[in-house]
Amino acid sequence: MKPFLAFVKKELFHILRDRRTLLILFGLPVIQIILFGFAITNEIRDAQIVVLDRANDQTSQEVIQRLTSSGYFKINQHVQTQTEMEAAFRRGDIKMGIVFPPLLNDARMHGGKAQIQIIADASDPNTANTLTAYASAIIRSYQLEKNTAPLPMTIQVENRMTYNPEMRGVYMFVPGVITLILMLVSAMLTSITIAREKETGTMEILLVSPLNPPLIIVGKVIPYMALSFINTLTILWLAKFVFGMPFNGSLSLLLVICLLYIFTALALGILISTKVKTMQAAMMISATGLMMPTVLLSGFIFPIESMPLPLQMVANLLPAKWFNIVIKDIMIKGVGLAFIWKYVIILAGMTIVLLTISIRNFKSRLA
Image (tube, helix red, strand yellow):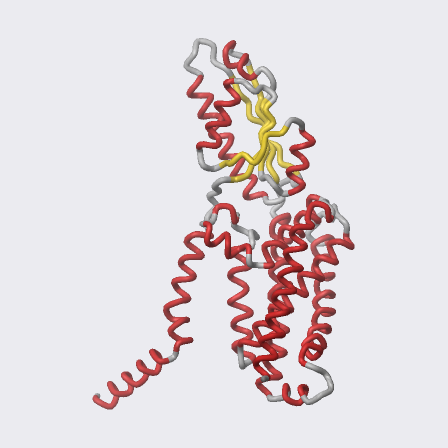
Protein backbone atom coordinates (compact mmCIF):
# COMPACT_ATOMS: atom_id res chain seq x y z
CA MET A 1 0.00 0.00 0.00
CA LYS A 2 2.84 2.36 0.84
CA PRO A 3 4.38 2.21 -2.67
CA PHE A 4 0.95 2.87 -4.15
CA LEU A 5 0.42 5.97 -1.98
CA ALA A 6 3.86 7.20 -2.93
CA PHE A 7 2.96 6.73 -6.58
CA VAL A 8 -0.28 8.72 -6.12
CA LYS A 9 1.66 11.45 -4.31
CA LYS A 10 4.14 11.62 -7.18
CA GLU A 11 1.34 11.92 -9.72
CA LEU A 12 -0.31 14.67 -7.65
CA PHE A 13 2.90 16.69 -7.53
CA HIS A 14 3.38 16.12 -11.23
CA ILE A 15 -0.06 17.59 -11.94
CA LEU A 16 0.47 20.53 -9.59
CA ARG A 17 3.79 21.37 -11.28
CA ASP A 18 2.18 21.42 -14.74
CA ARG A 19 0.71 24.90 -15.15
CA ARG A 20 -1.12 24.03 -18.37
CA THR A 21 -2.92 21.13 -16.70
CA LEU A 22 -3.88 23.33 -13.76
CA LEU A 23 -5.16 25.98 -16.16
CA ILE A 24 -7.35 23.44 -17.94
CA LEU A 25 -8.43 21.81 -14.66
CA PHE A 26 -9.44 24.94 -12.78
CA GLY A 27 -9.45 27.81 -15.28
CA LEU A 28 -11.57 26.29 -18.03
CA PRO A 29 -14.61 25.48 -15.82
CA VAL A 30 -14.58 29.00 -14.39
CA ILE A 31 -14.42 30.55 -17.87
CA GLN A 32 -17.19 28.29 -19.14
CA ILE A 33 -19.47 29.03 -16.18
CA ILE A 34 -18.95 32.79 -16.60
CA LEU A 35 -19.51 32.64 -20.36
CA PHE A 36 -22.54 30.36 -20.26
CA GLY A 37 -24.01 32.05 -17.20
CA PHE A 38 -23.93 35.53 -18.67
CA ALA A 39 -24.02 34.95 -22.43
CA ILE A 40 -26.69 32.29 -22.76
CA THR A 41 -29.79 34.31 -22.11
CA ASN A 42 -32.65 35.35 -24.31
CA GLU A 43 -33.43 38.30 -22.10
CA ILE A 44 -32.66 41.56 -23.87
CA ARG A 45 -31.72 44.76 -22.08
CA ASP A 46 -31.29 48.28 -23.43
CA ALA A 47 -32.30 47.45 -26.99
CA GLN A 48 -31.85 50.50 -29.20
CA ILE A 49 -35.11 51.84 -30.61
CA VAL A 50 -36.37 54.89 -32.49
CA VAL A 51 -39.66 56.66 -31.89
CA LEU A 52 -41.82 58.30 -34.55
CA ASP A 53 -44.25 60.23 -32.38
CA ARG A 54 -46.94 61.79 -34.58
CA ALA A 55 -49.12 62.42 -31.52
CA ASN A 56 -46.57 64.01 -29.21
CA ASP A 57 -49.12 64.25 -26.43
CA GLN A 58 -49.51 63.04 -22.86
CA THR A 59 -50.49 59.49 -23.79
CA SER A 60 -47.61 58.90 -26.20
CA GLN A 61 -45.15 60.36 -23.70
CA GLU A 62 -46.49 58.08 -20.96
CA VAL A 63 -46.14 55.01 -23.17
CA ILE A 64 -42.57 56.02 -24.13
CA GLN A 65 -41.77 56.52 -20.45
CA ARG A 66 -43.11 53.04 -19.65
CA LEU A 67 -41.02 51.49 -22.40
CA THR A 68 -37.76 53.17 -21.40
CA SER A 69 -38.23 52.68 -17.66
CA SER A 70 -38.70 48.93 -18.19
CA GLY A 71 -34.98 48.55 -18.85
CA TYR A 72 -35.64 46.61 -22.07
CA PHE A 73 -35.48 49.61 -24.39
CA LYS A 74 -33.25 52.60 -24.87
CA ILE A 75 -34.19 55.40 -27.24
CA ASN A 76 -31.53 55.88 -29.88
CA GLN A 77 -33.24 58.84 -31.50
CA HIS A 78 -36.59 60.49 -32.24
CA VAL A 79 -37.34 60.64 -35.96
CA GLN A 80 -39.82 62.70 -37.90
CA THR A 81 -40.48 60.46 -40.91
CA GLN A 82 -40.71 56.79 -41.81
CA THR A 83 -37.75 57.28 -44.15
CA GLU A 84 -35.51 58.32 -41.26
CA MET A 85 -36.59 55.23 -39.36
CA GLU A 86 -35.78 52.96 -42.30
CA ALA A 87 -32.35 54.59 -42.62
CA ALA A 88 -31.67 53.83 -38.95
CA PHE A 89 -32.60 50.18 -39.59
CA ARG A 90 -30.28 50.00 -42.57
CA ARG A 91 -27.38 51.46 -40.59
CA GLY A 92 -27.95 48.83 -37.91
CA ASP A 93 -28.39 51.51 -35.23
CA ILE A 94 -31.67 50.13 -33.92
CA LYS A 95 -33.51 46.90 -33.31
CA MET A 96 -37.03 48.29 -33.23
CA GLY A 97 -39.11 51.33 -34.11
CA ILE A 98 -42.40 52.55 -32.61
CA VAL A 99 -44.88 54.68 -34.54
CA PHE A 100 -47.51 56.61 -32.58
CA PRO A 101 -50.56 57.81 -34.55
CA PRO A 102 -51.86 61.39 -34.38
CA LEU A 103 -54.50 62.34 -31.81
CA LEU A 104 -53.64 59.49 -29.45
CA ASN A 105 -54.66 61.54 -26.44
CA ASP A 106 -58.09 62.23 -27.94
CA ALA A 107 -58.67 58.50 -28.23
CA ARG A 108 -57.82 58.14 -24.58
CA MET A 109 -60.10 60.94 -23.42
CA HIS A 110 -63.09 60.05 -25.58
CA GLY A 111 -62.95 56.29 -25.58
CA GLY A 112 -61.81 55.92 -29.15
CA LYS A 113 -59.49 53.48 -30.87
CA ALA A 114 -55.84 54.00 -31.68
CA GLN A 115 -53.20 51.86 -33.31
CA ILE A 116 -49.53 51.85 -32.30
CA GLN A 117 -47.23 50.25 -34.82
CA ILE A 118 -44.17 48.29 -33.72
CA ILE A 119 -41.57 47.61 -36.42
CA ALA A 120 -38.78 45.16 -35.60
CA ASP A 121 -35.60 44.19 -37.43
CA ALA A 122 -36.30 40.52 -38.13
CA SER A 123 -32.91 39.77 -39.68
CA ASP A 124 -32.48 38.34 -36.17
CA PRO A 125 -35.92 36.73 -35.72
CA ASN A 126 -35.41 35.67 -32.08
CA THR A 127 -34.52 39.16 -30.95
CA ALA A 128 -37.37 40.66 -33.00
CA ASN A 129 -39.89 38.27 -31.44
CA THR A 130 -38.67 39.01 -27.93
CA LEU A 131 -38.69 42.79 -28.36
CA THR A 132 -42.15 42.95 -29.90
CA ALA A 133 -43.46 40.73 -27.09
CA TYR A 134 -41.92 43.06 -24.48
CA ALA A 135 -43.34 46.20 -26.11
CA SER A 136 -46.79 44.72 -26.69
CA ALA A 137 -47.02 43.57 -23.07
CA ILE A 138 -46.00 47.00 -21.76
CA ILE A 139 -48.56 48.78 -23.96
CA ARG A 140 -51.32 46.34 -22.96
CA SER A 141 -50.44 46.86 -19.31
CA TYR A 142 -50.65 50.64 -19.79
CA GLN A 143 -54.02 50.31 -21.49
CA LEU A 144 -55.45 48.17 -18.69
CA GLU A 145 -54.22 50.65 -16.11
CA LYS A 146 -55.80 53.64 -17.86
CA ASN A 147 -59.10 51.97 -18.70
CA THR A 148 -60.65 52.76 -15.34
CA ALA A 149 -62.35 55.82 -16.89
CA PRO A 150 -66.03 55.65 -17.93
CA LEU A 151 -65.02 55.73 -21.59
CA PRO A 152 -62.29 53.12 -22.01
CA MET A 153 -59.93 53.51 -24.92
CA THR A 154 -58.69 50.73 -27.15
CA ILE A 155 -55.06 50.59 -28.25
CA GLN A 156 -54.31 48.09 -30.97
CA VAL A 157 -50.71 47.05 -31.38
CA GLU A 158 -49.67 46.22 -34.93
CA ASN A 159 -46.42 44.28 -35.21
CA ARG A 160 -44.47 44.41 -38.47
CA MET A 161 -41.28 42.50 -39.15
CA THR A 162 -38.94 44.15 -41.58
CA TYR A 163 -36.30 42.31 -43.71
CA ASN A 164 -37.70 38.92 -42.72
CA PRO A 165 -41.51 39.07 -42.61
CA GLU A 166 -41.79 35.27 -42.69
CA MET A 167 -39.56 35.04 -39.60
CA ARG A 168 -37.40 32.31 -41.14
CA GLY A 169 -34.74 30.96 -38.83
CA VAL A 170 -32.23 30.47 -41.65
CA TYR A 171 -31.82 34.24 -41.87
CA MET A 172 -30.06 34.06 -38.52
CA PHE A 173 -28.35 30.66 -38.68
CA VAL A 174 -26.87 30.66 -42.19
CA PRO A 175 -24.78 33.87 -41.79
CA GLY A 176 -23.73 32.69 -38.33
CA VAL A 177 -22.66 29.27 -39.59
CA ILE A 178 -20.71 30.88 -42.45
CA THR A 179 -18.92 33.04 -39.89
CA LEU A 180 -18.12 30.03 -37.71
CA ILE A 181 -16.98 27.71 -40.51
CA LEU A 182 -14.69 30.22 -42.19
CA MET A 183 -13.08 31.15 -38.87
CA LEU A 184 -12.49 27.57 -37.74
CA VAL A 185 -11.38 26.13 -41.05
CA SER A 186 -9.08 28.98 -42.04
CA ALA A 187 -7.44 29.45 -38.65
CA MET A 188 -7.15 25.73 -37.97
CA LEU A 189 -5.61 24.83 -41.33
CA THR A 190 -2.96 27.55 -41.12
CA SER A 191 -1.99 26.88 -37.51
CA ILE A 192 -1.73 23.13 -38.07
CA THR A 193 0.34 23.52 -41.22
CA ILE A 194 2.98 25.76 -39.66
CA ALA A 195 2.98 23.77 -36.40
CA ARG A 196 3.57 20.59 -38.43
CA GLU A 197 6.62 22.15 -40.09
CA LYS A 198 7.98 23.03 -36.66
CA GLU A 199 7.18 19.61 -35.18
CA THR A 200 8.74 17.62 -37.99
CA GLY A 201 11.77 19.91 -38.18
CA THR A 202 11.25 20.88 -41.82
CA MET A 203 10.88 24.55 -40.89
CA GLU A 204 14.68 24.81 -40.60
CA ILE A 205 14.99 23.63 -44.20
CA LEU A 206 12.62 26.37 -45.32
CA LEU A 207 14.58 28.96 -43.37
CA VAL A 208 17.82 28.26 -45.22
CA SER A 209 16.04 28.96 -48.49
CA PRO A 210 16.47 32.39 -50.15
CA LEU A 211 13.06 33.46 -48.85
CA ASN A 212 12.83 35.54 -45.71
CA PRO A 213 10.38 34.57 -42.88
CA PRO A 214 7.56 36.94 -43.93
CA LEU A 215 7.59 35.55 -47.47
CA ILE A 216 7.57 32.00 -46.11
CA ILE A 217 4.45 32.83 -44.11
CA VAL A 218 2.77 34.51 -47.06
CA GLY A 219 3.65 31.59 -49.28
CA LYS A 220 2.05 29.19 -46.85
CA VAL A 221 -1.06 31.31 -46.43
CA ILE A 222 -1.90 31.99 -50.10
CA PRO A 223 -2.91 28.39 -51.02
CA TYR A 224 -5.14 28.16 -47.98
CA MET A 225 -6.67 31.52 -48.79
CA ALA A 226 -7.55 30.25 -52.28
CA LEU A 227 -8.98 27.00 -50.90
CA SER A 228 -10.96 28.83 -48.22
CA PHE A 229 -12.35 31.17 -50.87
CA ILE A 230 -13.55 28.16 -52.88
CA ASN A 231 -15.07 26.90 -49.64
CA THR A 232 -16.81 30.25 -49.27
CA LEU A 233 -18.29 30.04 -52.77
CA THR A 234 -19.62 26.57 -51.99
CA ILE A 235 -21.21 27.74 -48.72
CA LEU A 236 -22.80 30.76 -50.38
CA TRP A 237 -24.16 28.59 -53.20
CA LEU A 238 -25.73 26.24 -50.63
CA ALA A 239 -27.12 29.23 -48.71
CA LYS A 240 -28.75 30.59 -51.86
CA PHE A 241 -30.07 27.50 -53.61
CA VAL A 242 -30.61 25.06 -50.75
CA PHE A 243 -31.71 27.30 -47.88
CA GLY A 244 -33.17 30.13 -49.93
CA MET A 245 -31.14 32.90 -48.34
CA PRO A 246 -31.61 36.24 -50.09
CA PHE A 247 -28.71 38.09 -51.72
CA ASN A 248 -30.15 41.59 -51.66
CA GLY A 249 -26.79 43.37 -51.70
CA SER A 250 -23.79 43.38 -53.99
CA LEU A 251 -22.35 39.90 -54.53
CA SER A 252 -18.92 41.30 -55.42
CA LEU A 253 -18.84 43.34 -52.18
CA LEU A 254 -19.87 40.25 -50.23
CA LEU A 255 -17.05 38.20 -51.78
CA VAL A 256 -14.47 40.91 -51.04
CA ILE A 257 -15.58 41.05 -47.40
CA CYS A 258 -15.45 37.24 -47.19
CA LEU A 259 -11.90 37.34 -48.58
CA LEU A 260 -10.92 39.93 -45.96
CA TYR A 261 -12.43 37.79 -43.18
CA ILE A 262 -10.60 34.71 -44.46
CA PHE A 263 -7.36 36.66 -44.39
CA THR A 264 -8.13 37.75 -40.80
CA ALA A 265 -8.73 34.14 -39.77
CA LEU A 266 -5.54 33.02 -41.50
CA ALA A 267 -3.56 35.70 -39.65
CA LEU A 268 -5.08 34.42 -36.41
CA GLY A 269 -4.01 30.90 -37.37
CA ILE A 270 -0.44 32.10 -37.93
CA LEU A 271 -0.47 33.74 -34.50
CA ILE A 272 -1.62 30.49 -32.89
CA SER A 273 1.09 28.54 -34.69
CA THR A 274 3.79 30.87 -33.29
CA LYS A 275 2.63 30.07 -29.75
CA VAL A 276 2.53 26.26 -29.95
CA LYS A 277 5.02 23.53 -30.70
CA THR A 278 2.83 20.65 -31.86
CA MET A 279 -0.01 20.06 -34.30
CA GLN A 280 -2.16 18.67 -31.50
CA ALA A 281 -1.85 21.87 -29.48
CA ALA A 282 -2.58 23.98 -32.55
CA MET A 283 -5.69 21.92 -33.30
CA MET A 284 -6.96 22.13 -29.71
CA ILE A 285 -6.50 25.89 -29.46
CA SER A 286 -8.03 26.49 -32.89
CA ALA A 287 -11.02 24.25 -32.27
CA THR A 288 -11.86 24.99 -28.66
CA GLY A 289 -10.36 28.44 -28.20
CA LEU A 290 -12.07 29.88 -31.25
CA MET A 291 -15.31 27.92 -31.51
CA MET A 292 -16.81 28.79 -28.12
CA PRO A 293 -16.17 32.56 -28.30
CA THR A 294 -17.35 32.66 -31.92
CA VAL A 295 -20.61 30.89 -31.08
CA LEU A 296 -21.33 32.70 -27.80
CA LEU A 297 -19.92 36.19 -28.29
CA SER A 298 -20.30 36.97 -31.98
CA GLY A 299 -24.00 37.78 -31.78
CA PHE A 300 -24.68 34.71 -33.89
CA ILE A 301 -27.17 33.25 -31.37
CA PHE A 302 -27.25 35.43 -28.27
CA PRO A 303 -27.67 39.23 -28.32
CA ILE A 304 -24.46 40.97 -27.34
CA GLU A 305 -26.35 44.00 -25.99
CA SER A 306 -27.71 41.84 -23.14
CA MET A 307 -24.30 40.70 -21.97
CA PRO A 308 -22.32 42.35 -19.15
CA LEU A 309 -19.96 45.12 -20.23
CA PRO A 310 -16.76 43.02 -19.83
CA LEU A 311 -18.16 40.36 -22.19
CA GLN A 312 -19.25 43.05 -24.65
CA MET A 313 -15.68 44.37 -24.63
CA VAL A 314 -14.36 40.86 -25.29
CA ALA A 315 -16.88 40.46 -28.11
CA ASN A 316 -15.57 43.65 -29.71
CA LEU A 317 -12.16 41.96 -30.03
CA LEU A 318 -13.59 39.08 -32.07
CA PRO A 319 -13.45 39.43 -35.88
CA ALA A 320 -16.46 37.10 -36.04
CA LYS A 321 -18.72 39.72 -34.45
CA TRP A 322 -18.01 42.34 -37.12
CA PHE A 323 -18.12 39.88 -40.01
CA ASN A 324 -21.46 38.52 -38.80
CA ILE A 325 -22.90 42.05 -38.83
CA VAL A 326 -21.51 42.79 -42.29
CA ILE A 327 -22.64 39.57 -43.96
CA LYS A 328 -26.18 39.92 -42.60
CA ASP A 329 -26.37 43.56 -43.63
CA ILE A 330 -25.27 42.76 -47.20
CA MET A 331 -27.28 39.57 -47.69
CA ILE A 332 -30.51 40.47 -45.88
CA LYS A 333 -30.70 44.27 -45.75
CA GLY A 334 -29.00 44.80 -49.10
CA VAL A 335 -26.88 47.70 -47.87
CA GLY A 336 -23.70 48.89 -49.57
CA LEU A 337 -20.27 49.98 -48.42
CA ALA A 338 -21.63 53.37 -47.27
CA PHE A 339 -23.41 51.61 -44.38
CA ILE A 340 -20.78 49.05 -43.39
CA TRP A 341 -17.48 50.86 -43.96
CA LYS A 342 -16.85 51.16 -40.21
CA TYR A 343 -17.04 47.40 -39.73
CA VAL A 344 -14.83 46.80 -42.76
CA ILE A 345 -12.17 49.14 -41.36
CA ILE A 346 -12.31 47.31 -38.01
CA LEU A 347 -11.83 43.96 -39.75
CA ALA A 348 -8.96 45.31 -41.85
CA GLY A 349 -7.35 46.82 -38.75
CA MET A 350 -7.61 43.52 -36.89
CA THR A 351 -5.99 41.74 -39.82
CA ILE A 352 -3.05 44.14 -39.90
CA VAL A 353 -2.53 43.89 -36.12
CA LEU A 354 -2.75 40.09 -36.08
CA LEU A 355 -0.40 39.77 -39.05
CA THR A 356 2.12 42.19 -37.55
CA ILE A 357 2.15 40.38 -34.19
CA SER A 358 2.37 36.99 -35.92
CA ILE A 359 5.36 37.95 -38.07
CA ARG A 360 7.11 39.53 -35.08
CA ASN A 361 6.53 36.40 -32.97
CA PHE A 362 7.67 34.23 -35.83
CA LYS A 363 10.92 36.18 -36.11
CA SER A 364 11.55 36.15 -32.34
CA ARG A 365 11.04 32.39 -32.24
CA LEU A 366 13.66 31.96 -34.90
CA ALA A 367 16.15 34.34 -33.32
